[in-house]
Image (cartoon, rainbow, N blue to C red):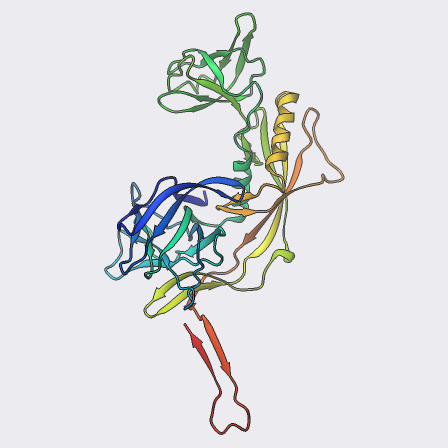
Amino acid sequence: MTTLLVHDTNSAWTSTHPALEVTTEGRKLLDREVTVNRLRFSGGPTEAVAEFVPDRPLDLTEWDELRVWIRAEAPADGTTACPFYLALSYEDAEDTLQEQHRWFVPVNEPQVWEQRVIGISADRRGAVVRFRVETVGTTAFTTELFRLVAVREEMLEDIERALGEALSGMSLPGLTRVPVRATANPGDSTVTLDYAPGMAAGNRIFLEGSPLGDEVHDVVGAEHDRAAGRTRLTFPEASPLVGTFTAGTSFASVTVPVAAESASDPDETVTPRVVLSCTDVREDPERTGYIAQRDSFRPRGRLTACAVRPPARAFHADYQVSVFGGSHAAQVTVHNGVLSRLSADRALWINEAPVPVEVLPPPPLEERTPRQSAPVYVRVGSRMQTGPREELPWVRRTEVRAGRPDVPGDDEGVGTES
């Protein structure tokens, strides 16, 4: 896994001062319905804090960045006219007395969702015990934050995980939430459902309703009794039920696993299933910028520093998405689900950021086996970082003065403001 969810913002962070009110609100972020933390600061001379304490210390050693979405009423670019008014910080259990992990949160455009990136690879982060958002200055403001995550970028792994998440959870008509007809107990290797003739050996079944949690089992046998109105599914003896699934309150659904192609595919007997095969990866110079990236703005004494690194290189990765097994009706449903979920109208979310995806025409010499739906070919746009961050003083304003040759005094020079 290359993304760790730190806080989903479904619950409000705890404010430590009455001037800072934190509530949860429903919002739309691009193509997603989300829950955000809404922060309202009434202003005043006292800085206020909202904090979140994890259930246990978080080891973020394997993660390089923190990312959070922000939308605010007023810009904050650190200039005199638009100073920073919000900071994000955390505490580590092993911190020394003077050690700080604190960064300003910029806002480029008001009322626009922006993802802020903070590099933490040079900071202590092995046992993080507290996160804070802090007001900076005395100006009143209202802002919204969505989903704090820790990220370690691995481009191809990230793409395949995002494709799997986008295609997971497909429902099949007549094979979704079929009621359990007779209570099944721990240790049983069979379950009896209402009549569902579409279920068959090779299906992967998702069972919900047990007090011990949901379960997933592969079907090795299916018996259908139309007259009695029931279907009996058999699981491998090595994979019996763990919990109790009560008749009338428990349900079974056929799931469609999605996996990247490998030499030994563990799901090769499951039907239907979706397999992702990478067919091409190449750099996309038209999408690659040439301006250095700046992020991670933090106080360093009287100055503000930022992290600078080379521009990320843009790539596109092509994938063949194949549907295997199942009835013709199931294959058509899954095929249609692939096309609808990987359309250009819906962004693919990688590390909590949207990237473009499009369906490509098939190659001229397409090879497929009989009784297999034609694959879908998609292109995903992504980026790869090519250099490490370097912390430098942040120069906000530069002046170049050049005097006329006939001016008696020396009025030339270069001035900067940090």
